[in-house]
Amino acid sequence: MLPELNPFRPGAGVRPPELVGRQNEIDLVDLMVAKNRARRNDGGLITYGLRGVGKTVLLNELHRNVDRAGWVTVQFEARPGSAGKLVSRQSLARGVAMAGRRMARFRTAVAEVRAAVSTVSSFALTVAGVSLNLGVEPSDHRANSGLMEVDLEEVVADLALPLQKNQSALAIFVDEMQDLDQDLLTALLAVQHKAAQSDWPFFVIGAGLPTLRRTLAEARPYSERFALHEVGALTRASAKKAIVRPAGQLGVAFAEDAVDAIVDEAQGYPFFLQTYGKAVWDLTPDRHIDLEVAGAGIAEGNADLDQKFFPARWDRTTAAERQYLRAIVDVGGSVASTSAVAEHIGVIPSALSPARQSLIEKGIIYAERRGYVGFTVPNMDRFIVRQVQLVD
Ligand SMILES: Nc1ncnc2c1ncn2[C@@H]1O[C@H](COP(=O)(O)OP(=O)(O)OP(=O)(O)O)[C@@H](O)[C@H]1O
Ligand SMILES: [Mg+2]
Image (cartoon, rainbow, N blue to C red; front, side):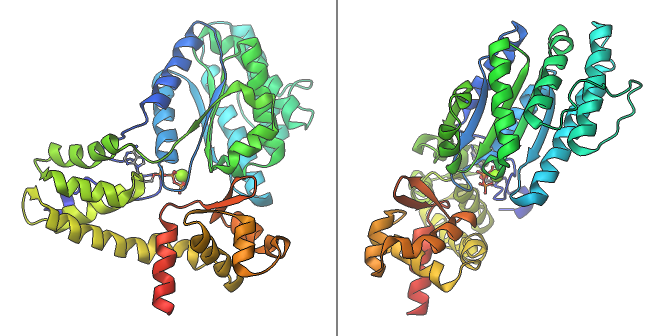
């Protein structure tokens, strides 16, 4: 079919033609908006899942929805290291400044708005050295301690009343939340906790890798003010919908066994569904996709994944790390116990700690639960088997 009409879109953060299987999270945030109108705050939302399951796309969708509801929003992607730490602070300061700018136009609660804008100016200056021209001097006693948690809480406290009077809220969206520095993470969790206690209109909505789950467990009791949702593989019904609907809207139909083949191969992982969908569309000569075309598209899609998606990870590993990855595949497939890996390689577990740690830092594996590691990318095990076959 005409490639320019191809509805399927593999790509990081690229909105799919049909966002399926995420209604729970969408409803939860709609409920947040409704409760906020009634001046209630039951906490934020954090989603976690493997690479390519659709976390960024979902976060963007939730962002759009609260924007439409009149909320003031900030979104940034956390990055590791000290450069990332600086960028996060600048984004946060700029976002909060934007909230100040919007509020400067509020017609109600004028005195409170002035006070809040003054606190916002002080926050932007303290946290990121950003100087705002909002017609109000930065406060000399609010949000200027240099302690992130204290300053953020003061900003949120001072913004609360003017935002509430205008049926609005401040939402902070953080992607790749596992890379957030400890200081900012703790501040966001603690201020969300305080906001829920005080019914302040402040919400943190985050997304990250499954390692986040453990980080948050360690940050209890603050993290209890969050709904924690795993974003995972799509159910069979949703995966079918993700393929059939966008094509159907353009007058292209799939044979039942053709959809089944694509859904089986993708194992419900959104990135793979988009990849196969795109390849199949480009190959099909007419408006009916049968099993044969689907099979050819899957092969094409896999070739594409083998060239770009998987090597982006594999090529960054050392020989020792590859040995570790192969051992995971040999003993467990996609998840394996660290002691079994060590036994398989024939060394004591502690000898493998450096390789394990470095693979975790590279985002290739994660500590699935205590004593177990798993691949962050679905089907990585199958890719590794293919690599090993190539070498042999
Ligand atoms: N609910 C969905 N239905 C159909 N396709 C989806 C869905 N969610 C995401 N996708 C598609 O999957 C791909 C990956 O999405 P996205 O970049 O949001 O994943 P991610 O979890 O953020 O990945 P990463 O961990 O690498 O950042 C994109 O091509 C996107 O269009
Ligand atoms: Mg993402």
